[in-house]
Length: 355
Image (cartoon, rainbow, N blue to C red):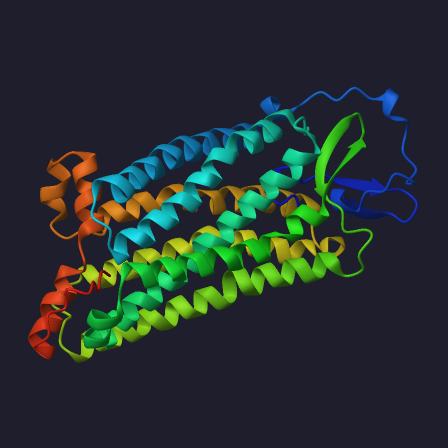
């Protein structure tokens, strides 16, 4: 697949009447000489392409500005805490992703790669780094909230900014490891009068299948299952302690899980379908990859919005400034759950159980 390059064109190989995706393109294929073609972008003539460009520009603006505000507030305006450590790390990941989006938007608009081999490899690496780091950090946050609810005494005594920072570093290290193949397989080729940034899997047998399955399992299935388990445990704990009068925790949990699922599922589904693109409608796969990639990128600007709506007393915060709302929302250490736990455990649950 294009791996966020927004180039999803299939070429017909007349010799065997099969479709060959750009990542399998080889120079020894029977094609006209490059000098015979002058590439002209047709994006502005296609409604879907124009719509995707507009959507991605909006995602870039909202994500870049929103995450910059989160970084400013959590990094410079608030006292350091476990929660602000999570928020800051997640915002940095999304901010880096958004900072690279103009390159991908230009590639989508021009339908040609003009930024050279170094940027071809770097942008793919950075964008997969964002994907894995965001997901791994969400898993860490979910596990932290689960432990805080299930073991409030342990959370109070063992939970610290230093340990949270170590967990963040481990999540980033794992993300780098999962993203390194982008530096290996990403390559450039010239075809039909244009330069294409693509995944060159031709020299490594089964490498495409291996990478797609690894990213699907390690970057979606396993993290999603862990998040579901963590929040299921929290819900059962709150229900068993008759915490159901407040629907706020359940709404927030549902929003986090739904956002994760909706943003990433289409992307991974079409990546898996692409492995056997000969048996599927290539136009549907092409469109699905484009839309799925855009939906995945939308996660980078949805996170700051979730920070705003995660605070209690939203009506009061809505009347205040945007910065005040975000600072209050991020600074809340799950007051609703904490109040209950203080009654049930007779322990000061200042260790956040923000849900």
